[in-house]
Image (cartoon, rainbow over all chains, first blue to last red; front, side):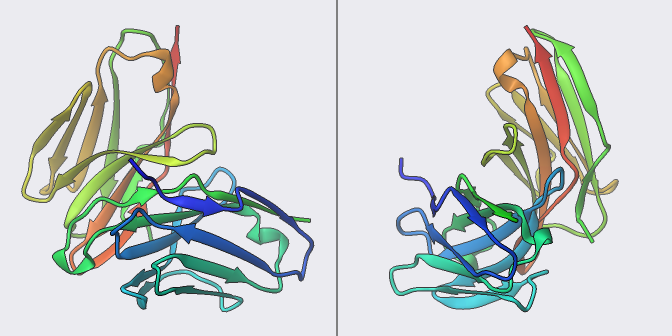
Length: 115
Length: 111
């Protein structure tokens, strides 16, 4: 079965640079979520989109922005990178937010290292 | 603040033994989910239990949910070396699909 695809898998950036992470949800899933997991930490919710509209916002820095496109893929844009942004970034997808409970399936993550 | 919080545990068990880990949370939830993560890799969904369910099984996994105590437990029976991983519980609230993760439990299964 198709899974959530994230690219790139690894990314190394310098401080103050920008980064763009991409997420391709499971086909027919209409909701995308982004989570950040720092070293030794639990994942923290950043933001989610349902049918290309932002549906929820968590602890996402103002330096970060995200969107979901017409083909349902999503991109997380990160600017003015800081050392503390080094983390594993997960994308997850699920079907039909309006139906309530549904399993979120996670991608393999993008490991961002800021030097 | 996090919804799901496991009792911080680092379990080290022999292959074939059972492993139990617990999770507590603070507010009303729609469901609780358990995920496995191998050494900083992806999160693999294990099982979802809804707020109106008390117990659920999936293969060697057994999950219980006690909404009165706001707690859940995950039991892995007949553990295998491949079960070595970190296990997270995550809660989802009504009307809000974000997952709130707790601290992971590190489980090491010794062959």
